[in-house]
Amino acid sequence: MDLELYNGIHNMPIELEETDLTPKKDEEAKPRLAENKMSDKFSQRNKIGPFASRSSRNKWAVEIEESVRSLSPWPITYDVGSIQGANFSEFTYTEFAGGGVWVTTQSREVNCRLIDFASKVDSGKEGEELFEKFVSSFADKYELESLDDKYNDIKHAVFLPGHNLLDLIDTSALDKLLLEEDDVRVKPHPLTHNDALKMVSSKCGWQKVLPKNISGAKLLDQCETVYSTTASEMIITGAALGKTVYDLSLWSASGAGVYQPFHRIITYIQKREGKEAAKKAIANILACPWSGVVFEFMPDYEERLKLYFDKALEMRELYRPLSTGRGNIGGNKKGEKK
Image (cartoon, rainbow, N blue to C red; front, top):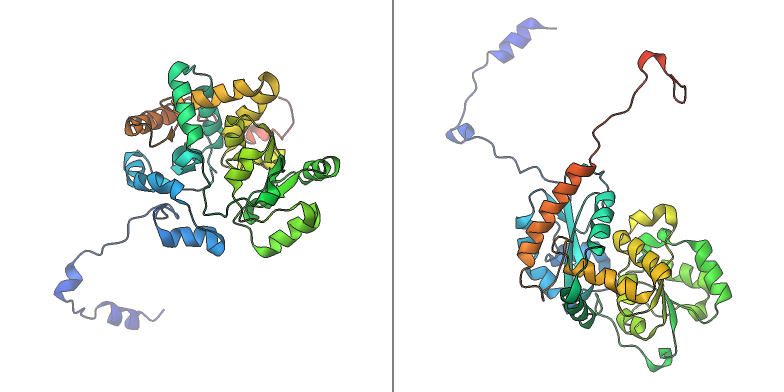
């Protein structure tokens, strides 16, 4: 090392301006997608692409977004998957059927347990009233075309997820369904690009695949049987309308769908106890003050959100892991008994 050169550079006078004395302000460190918002039209375009636009159904959800974010005790992000363990450190929120908002944690396990507990809290008359308001609020999430008369006879339909989640489908179960029941039709998600549509149509049969831009809500309303995945609201709304519902999600990947906490309850209860019991479970969730699901027809929605955040943190304390692995202490190898 040239010490003479080093000392020469080190001892050079540094000329500072007055502005150089002002402390540098760095941007606040935040989760990667923390600034994505439901109300940001540019964020929405990046998220859903040029394939569709949100309907007016989501107007109230957009209006209360800042309230949801301000009430959250920890970082909260719009519409992201839950990828943390029971000791989660973030919350998330998204639109919900009927124009509502659903707030969840970043832990699938905690989300499933919380909704499961909420479904078992008897809601009585309040649940019945909220359930009726919920059902009367059903509408398409996106701006879609009216249902043509030529589709009026469809009674059994598969509602697919968008092209980014087609891998969620149990293709063996779908193949079997379409082979055995020739009157089942397939409704692609509005957010499906043409290459994916061609692939789906080739696999399912071009004659069975409906246009992606027709109203899913109208089609659902006339159906008797509804098939979908944990990435879709359709099983929730279908069960609420008294339809027979089936989950076609690949079981090992069902957690990739945001609605898994609802589906696992609804499909199981409807199969074991019947359609009215499934409706009752939905009513219980709607009425439960700490379920995380809120609507415009709930004047106390802010208080409900506060109760939700308290309950979620209580669940975290209950289920977060307290132990660690044993490691390789004393030369103990995996699977070796001591």
